[in-house]
Length: 159
Image 1 (cartoon, rainbow, N blue to C red):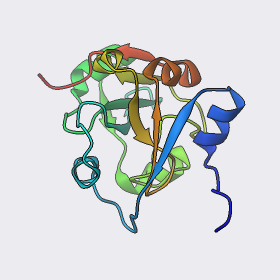
Image 2: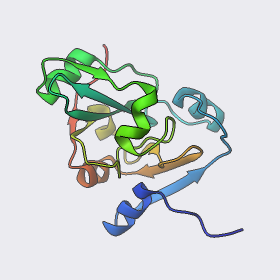
Image 3: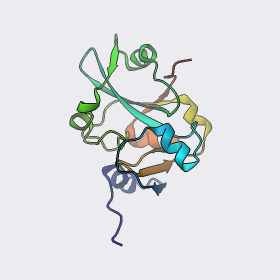
Image 4: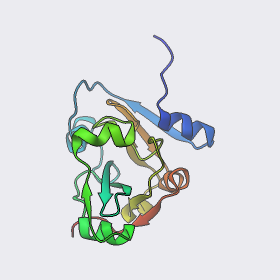
């Protein structure tokens, strides 16, 4: 078995000397984060999905929220300083981020977009995000995620 091929996200974490743990699992096609958490016995609260949105200004934004939650578009727009935002269409994810659906992570996109992490992440020592490809997860400290993405905590979910 050869050496693990690193994703952009892993290379950036390594370069910034940020501690993380890798988890891999079998996954040929996209399945949503809740199904993956169920399959792996992981807590929904610490498992975060990455959503990419575009504002009225045509600026892209990245939102990391718990997998079982729904992004509050009004609140997200307010946090981003936009009149309104809309989620990027699935077919455009790769073009915008360089990652594929299901393997999209806030770290190491084609460009560093303004990044927001749901404030619940502060409650945990580590959270789980995509590792940059299907079947790969990264466990890391949420503060480290903010540091490496120049992100900030925000209230982002539908209440």
